[in-house]
Image (cartoon, rainbow, N blue to C red; front, top):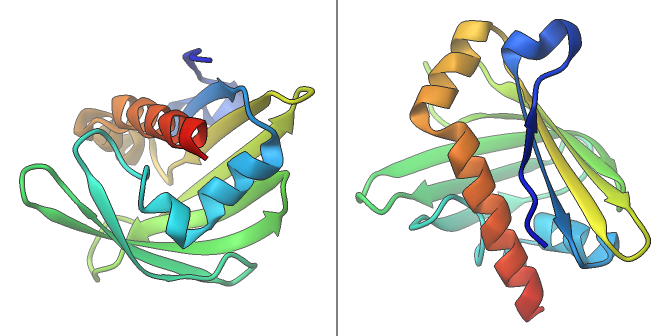
Length: 159
């Protein structure tokens, strides 16, 4: 059930990336696929990437440390700090690199809306500055986000 929806909104529009997708899957299953290390390794990241999770504790103040292995052989260390977890409705977290000196983390809100057996997943990334957002867009964050959500769809179809 592919739909692409990329939008900007309100006062933070110049600092946001918002993408969404519909899944013909109950939201509890989509939430579980997003929050279980045994599942995310199968779909997290854009096309060609693999992911190794070192720790994943999905609760407020919990940490998810992982490495995204790019198809070009480059490893990208990531650290997510969960701020809010309301199963199966939404997640709020700070996402940054795992190394010192990286750009400041950006905040992500993931919502899982129940539309009667269909789930609308909305991924809202809010950056500290418009320049930080623009740098992520240049790096391919929007297309990479769509590819990641497409990979999630393929994984959900197998679950």
